[in-house]
Length: 266
Ligand code: ADP
Ligand code: MG
Image (cartoon, rainbow, N blue to C red; front, side, top):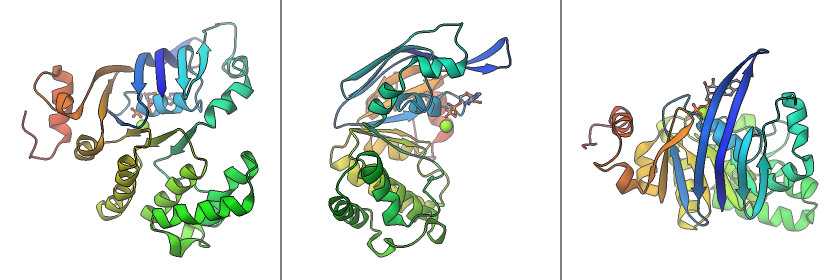
């Protein structure tokens, strides 16, 4: 469903310096499965996720989402802006339509109600029939347990409610793949639980999902596959049993040991 083949991305730091963030990413997230992305802070997890929906444009490599493929080639004569244009805007928008993103800090439209937040994309971008969109949006709000918040504004909701609204908004676009960037890291444990419950439902429905998370217990419980990112590379990949098993490289076991509650024993 999602493939990254030798994807590289650097950020320019002034005229002559660049920070290589994704050094060489090879990655596959299969259809109908949940893939967790774990790894230390600064490893490139967010950048990788943002490359998948082209909020960042890779320098090199191949990206395939839901059968659509874009190849990226480095061309030093292009400025970052020109490079963004080098990849056709139409291809970017086309590919982005297949993905739905849920951010750490929710990013709801503050001046729209919860229902309007969900309806905006399908009606304005996908030009779907507002009546049908409304019915679907109400069903989604039921699903994320926000049926009573339909006409509320985001600022009146708790963080957990805002994140559930953001998940409903992403689902409203009927994406082929859902991308979550640390969806619960801004939340207290109690609110985290209600969001994880919704995500767990989506896992059980066999949505295709990629979830960046620091919550290793959750990753271990719900993910079909886990990719461990370190220094801009996928340093390990496997099932939870493999990743949490005994045969992983030291940097993986060290990370897991440091991140895990006391019940983790290698
Ligand atoms: P993670 O999500 O794994 O913590 P990120 O992908 O956010 O890692 O960041 C990886 C590295 O790239 C960090 O060193 C970060 O400072 C840097 N970085 C991320 N975005 C930018 C940007 N827009 N400009 C410059 N550096 C960036
Ligand atoms: Mg991040």
